[in-house]
Image 1 (cartoon, rainbow, N blue to C red):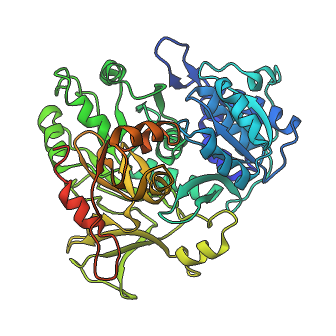
Image 2: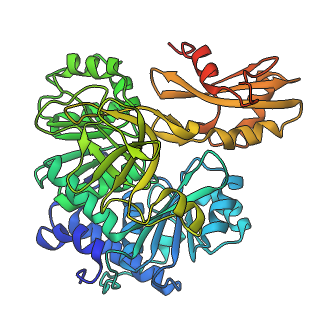
Length: 496
């Protein structure tokens, strides 16, 4: 039933072998088995094709996390479509660009967003609420049964938008092979089996929650404790019966504030991973002291899925992201040549995990994805003599706050258009909870309060500055370029 569809043939393996095995344990709700999960995915695929979805069409989705949303993802792939998840925090103004650029055949949104998204005028719009109700589920046929549309490993399965620090947001095109191969590598490298119970508290509009967590669990046949959002109380309640947690540094800093986090609580756990933002060594040390477990930190990007990981067995070295995963090549480049150990340069990666290019951006694709398959990440790193990779900074001034990418140029453009503003610089500074916090430094006749109020309506919450400063001028070099490093140094201790 699934063999013709490259990705679903991998992800549905346990739905065929062990259909009664639990996939999603949902506190306060019924448990969803592997068989039921894919029955629902088949019904989604039938509904989507009835609405006119054809192979290669995009399905744009901005909904709260639910098992039905996972079924929509799987159903889209079964039907040969391309899944396009969108952050639930995006405003209608931000969504307009994504939907116009991707031209989806079908758009699925929360019922509360229906009017604004319909007004954008792209695709057939349906609703899906966090409790699984909506016009999409109303349109589902009563019975499953769907012959998967044939898709090869190079056919697209998803597009995830990732912004550059200049210019338009870019749609990273991920193939069936990209997603299937990376999930299989992580299953083996991190030792996931059907005996595992993964605490799934990540959002599913992001590569971390949708592909790293969900796909790896599916391909291993693992169960999940499927939480609608990060909830320390729910995670603590789940931990005695779970074996793994995938999180971002914020998860760990907030859990550390609870005295119930002890070695006894974590006694059944075998693996804690962290990614999407750098984890401070201080957080690593505190987690080890409190639980007896070393967090396994890894590194990836929307365009590459996971590229490196600290070892499952062997030394998990705090402050590093470990080694290239099996099948992934990594090199550190500078001045057109590969650098030696200890030198700082730009990470480039190559392998079956690397994306297919940027949607409708051949020139940008050619700039960053070389003809021989090497992808220029823009992240600065060094590698020691033992092969451990350490991220030392990011080109392009990318900020990662709470696990989400924030691109300063986007925020600066909005601030610069506000009344009384002459110019602005947006930077990321260390934050004990979010990893990095967004800070805006502004020149002009305005106030921090006025700017904060204006940005509330224009930006998703995770992009909004946590501090705004009005200054007489921005630091510049002799060529007139704003020196963001000087600003980062000046405000580095702001949230210490």
